[in-house]
Image (cartoon, rainbow, N blue to C red; front, side, top):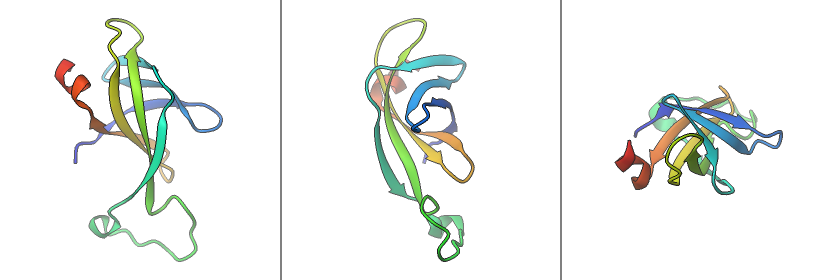
Length: 102
């Protein structure tokens, strides 16, 4: 699976506000959509202690519609994940419009 580190500024409620990726700043063009995906703990050799709590076995995922702050105003769609344990963001899917222009 494709993943790449990405910087995401969040609101107090956790919703993404701005994105920096490959030296380019982006703003959101639409309200982000959130869901959760089960992490492949069997591939990661991850042992989760009983009763540790939510957020360990699942990744928080967001689909973002982005527009560059400077330059062409084309809307790009990407999926990013947030790992609550490390507080790191990863770009996991680049939808066709952004892949063609990159």
